[in-house]
Length: 121
Image 1 (cartoon, rainbow, N blue to C red):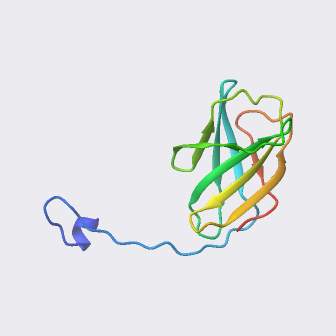
Image 2: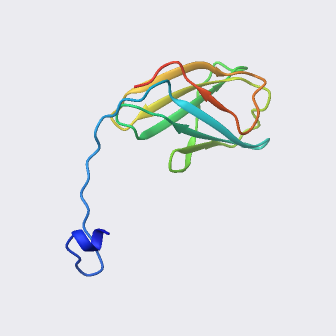
């Protein structure tokens, strides 16, 4: 479609875009996947700038925030066994705003479940 509406040069179709702030209903959501050796978290329903730049997780048995790494898109990972622990999350968007969702995931969570934070951007 872009080839039809844009100028096609040397195998490239130039596309310009800009992000616009968005409003989302409800809190930031966290979908948990993985296995006992690593945890994948899909972060979605993010308002404000909308693109997640950083995610930290705090297991219930710790006072320390652990840095998660981007796996792909808005999927973040940590390579630790965190089974049986509840979680809090810090989500930072590309405009530098941060939302902290404390104790959003209970200790009895299971892979495939989604949890909603109490606030949004």
